[in-house]
Length: 550
Image (tube, rainbow, N blue to C red; front, top):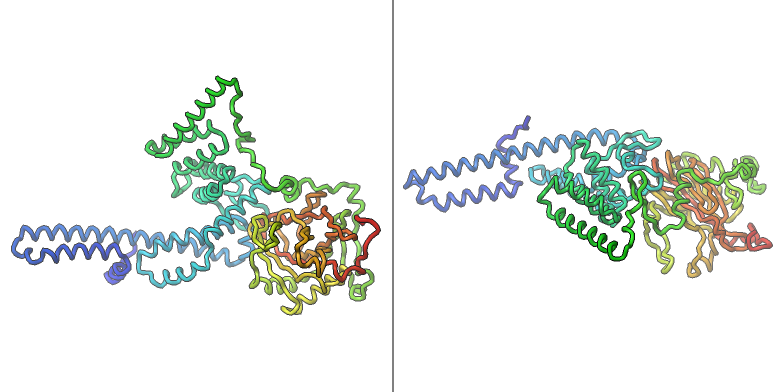
């Protein structure tokens, strides 16, 4: 049923719709140009009758178009009202589901823009003005691309197939969210634009599968097949590319690229056959697949498989023999007066290098205060370029961080003092308290905390990063472990606890075994804070050993 429009609404619609104004202006101009001769000829006036009828038909078509738009806008508003009612009731819980996070970014960057273009045609001046102002704070194309890549990162790290992600079947989630055909196509197109044909194939296949099941979509099967066949060709599977191109041609015989692509593929196969006949060479090898999935191409990280396996909880080298060397105890900071009455619970997480976890380091109230202080200062976390020493953002570190000083609030000073008491090290030369929030698929790939760059200015004054004290300020439903690929350890976040390890041997040499990573957050919202203790001021608190590796 169409919504009713009165004449004032139509008038306002006309005011806001350039093509209608142009139509009326053109018709009136024609009438004005012939006005002096219309009264002298009824026959000529009949032309005006037909002109008026055309105007009415155009007007009715416009009204129908506007009413159709209003129905779409109303449907969108109702859907968004239902969605935001659910999401605002528990924002962090809702966004802990990575598909919800991806769709929020996609919605604000793409779908609200489409709605804006729709609404711009009517008289909803206030809404457009508000939306235009708000849009400057919306995610942009880069954000949507980043969100899509985050889902792909989770897909790879935790060995999730596109069907699982599309159905929103993640462990520990309170909310269910699905990816549509268009969402899956968007994922594939993001990978395609990045030259990542491996993920292009996975997501275009998923889009095609859902399209074949009869799901609603604005994207056509022909478009999906166009991208999919080309991506598969780029992976080296010419025969399958041809098979998909034939299907594309059967759907759209007039498709421009499909015909030329088919001829090109046939020519390539013909050349292969000719070369084989001349040189008696074996056929070109097809890319290897497992259960119909192409092999994931290698990348820049040598320990990628070990790192990701540890993130999944696989390959942890906790043997029964090692387990026997790990203990729990009360820790009083070597008879520190502040800890004699209230020592901390200390648990060995690993024997060599020695990594310990402390319990009840931060209270819930302290955590919330630190988060409150950090949020306004959060900015994309940076890394130091190994060649130039300049701080820059990197794809292998996906989080936002801020730095808190003791002057910001008393709680910062209390936490710093507590870490000093626990470790027995001085905070005078330590770095500020860093607070980090890992968002959707947030991670920090394997890295060293200590510097291996002689040009670092802090090395001359404060010395290298002697030790790391890492506070977990949230539980994480799935993923988000701290892993050490060199010796196969995985440490899982527990709210209020902290882990501690030394980055340097007593000699001052870097302990390369401490190369570690923050695994991508699969489900949840991960908050941490950390303190890096430096060498200077700790010479007598942690004196040198007799050998280089003490």
